[in-house]
Image 1 (cartoon, rainbow, N blue to C red):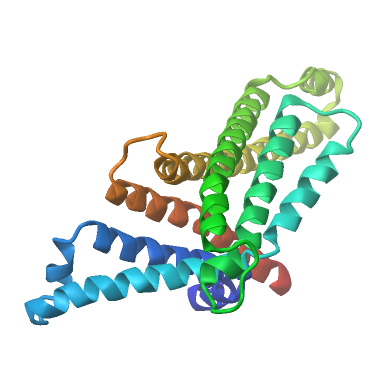
Image 2: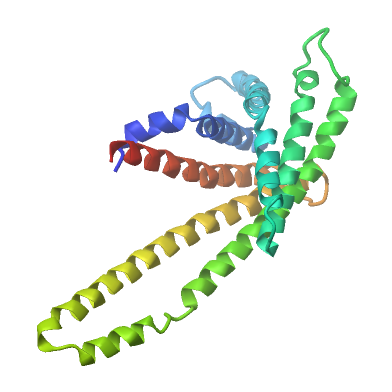
Length: 275
């Protein structure tokens, strides 16, 4: 197993892991600014006049983190379009595949809308593509696309979880009966062979069960993260009347869930390099 420090180094130098770290910090700061009563507790050693200044500084820091994360995700939309196209060109597609295609296509479109408005939202004097007002309008519309992507992604993950449970519930094939027949017909000299085969089958079943449980846990975390993330575009588009603090809390938990998947991936990559 990879050490925690080595795994954290891999996580922090991974582009997705770095983006998740920034999102985690942004969500924590957003929670503090959404509930002003928390700021005096955090800055209890500072005079009351510094509390208001601290809230303004935190707000500016959130904006900077958001723009930095957008810059990191500048070309992620291309990866989403590519993955959706790779599944689309497959001859036979299931419901799960179509949901995946829709989800990644919407994610790609959302990322593209974020990327093309980045320069305008940075508000650099003399550097503009659409103009600030038009960029804000496009950015607002992108939240609807993001919501559609999350809905399709959640449905796709739900189908995967259902299929995984169905496959695990299917009983073994008749090969087990054949093995039992061999046990009865084999001689005393071959008694160890069926016993060893039975032990091997049991070990294989246990390994398959562990792998299935691991897969279900990962899919469940992804489903929960998608459902939590839906609160952000639903609130931004006005589809749901949610307190901004609740949205920030949902953002925090979804960041932890998605970040844990990257954390696991980094640990597995370290273990593979060692083996």
